[in-house]
Image (tube, rainbow, N blue to C red; front, side, top):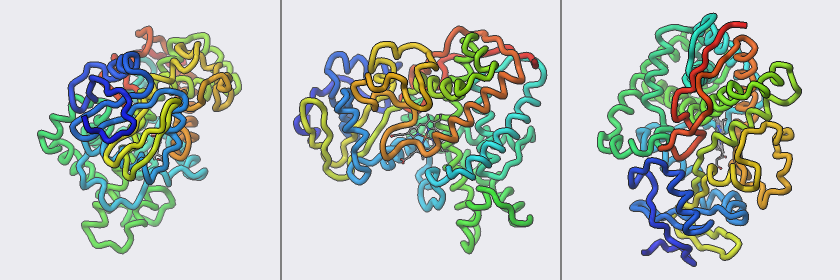
Length: 426
Ligand code: HEM
């Protein structure tokens, strides 16, 4: 087998889920690690992938320079399994630029408005799936933040949600088993959904053009296309908005779902949250994100590079991928990490992180140069969502615990089954 990786670590007799249907890709890779050790290669038709799980291996992974081993290109290769290629060309707005202090304050104000509409929708009592609730809330907040949609219960909001759900780039890693079908259909459904979103967003652009100037993120996105002829301008604005919104759909709603579901099933912790214990909500947000992580961290090799573990320095050629997989380290990197315990966090660090063989072995929002730029915002949004729900409603869980969707590999886990709660206004 010619992978070009030297020295060549063991090559596991497994495939990644885009190349062979796997019921539980995370379990498959966990089993490969047990059999082949902490460093092994999975070969595939497009490229070999070098996996690293040991302390030195994971530390070396996070230190890889972007110019040699690119996260951006790996993400793009992943997302174009699902999203139309034209969505990526010519973008002028990038998610990494959107999280300044003032932006975050504006987003949280929009989240408050979105929560208020969501509670109108819930009414005084009923049943709801917590992950469906957080997903809809994420749409309502995000579209208010970057698409200028005032949170509402209008039919237009449901039309946007349906189209964004059909387009959802996260399906590339949430449902890898679907991607062969998406490719075979030439991304027809995704292109149709993109066209629906674009038409709806063009209405917003026309409304903005006719109204006095506003000072929000949507206005900034619109401003980046000043002077361009139509229809390029409107399509450009709409696609900038689409890519930001799709980015926001990857992790935040799912991590918030884990947080709400775990609070709903841990009445002792919930009682302390309701009593207003200082910092506890954020500890809950971090703990749920740690346990919900199903991310595969990928780097696409663009220039010959070297990555190290305790035994060797591996030369990795252009075209290969380098990876680690969070669910395999987040709960096992030292004893005691398996269960839910928000008190293991002190501010944003693990209380015992000095005992970890490498602190990179436990990951919520990333390490090094690619650490999530939306971390402070995401934590604040998770805390505000949880605090608002549990202050407004008494909640009783009709499930015992959250389990990750087994086919998923990447991002924060979607739930394997609905996490339904009965709620009643307090
Ligand atoms: C609870 C919610 C979230 C979690 C757990 C999360 C997690 C992560 C992680 C682990 C990384 C590093 C990936 C790597 O090293 O390969 C990352 C990067 C990133 N995240 Fe998040 N994220 C969340 C929310 C968001 C949101 C809401 C946005 C934007 C709308 C966002 C935008 C980004 C971007 C642009 C990067 C890449 C940064 C870079 O390459 O320099 N994230 N996120």
